[in-house]
Length: 238
Image 1 (cartoon, helix red, strand yellow):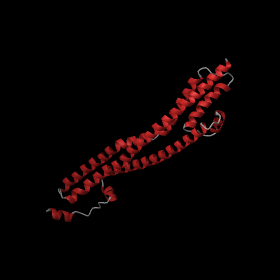
Image 2: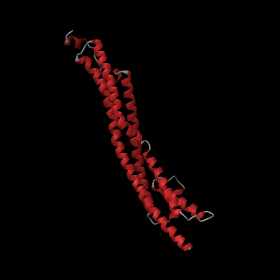
Image 3: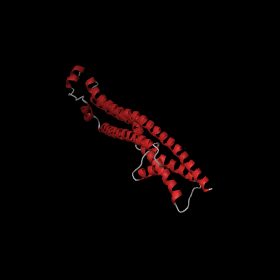
Image 4: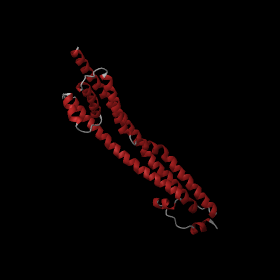
């Protein structure tokens, strides 16, 4: 059979994206579906985290404005203690709660109060950072593993395509091209899932580092304020 006869004898093949998916081997289909689901999940994380960071930045700005407005610490504590606190407000409430436990108990436990407040600040900052970092590891995993998973589908598809070519003993382009295209489609989906995941992970991780630096800076300032007040109370008590 000459190539012209082979091309005429070859059945019409759907080369659309859906057609390439539908004609692919079961293993390649499984890889494609898995990568598409991972891509959708990555985008949901990206959107959710982007909104979370915007909301967190806005809440931090509002709290800093209230904190440096001249309101008393007691008044500020009462206003934020009655509602769920996040970010800088959570750090402030945790430190003030330890402060009030020490001065409002049956005994005034002032000794090592500064150390206890710093411990509370560190623990609260760690919790807030963990909230911001949650699910970012999934983006990193898809960003690093996505291309390799797609490559696995491509290798499997090419193996299947060459096996079919060998069985049919027909090497015309009309027979070879569809199988190769189906296989390469898996790699394309892997890159489609991995590239946004990598870019978003780097951007969101930088936002986490920025928020952590802001939390730690406020904690240092607030710890210094409370430390001065402790010294003043100790000097008055003496």
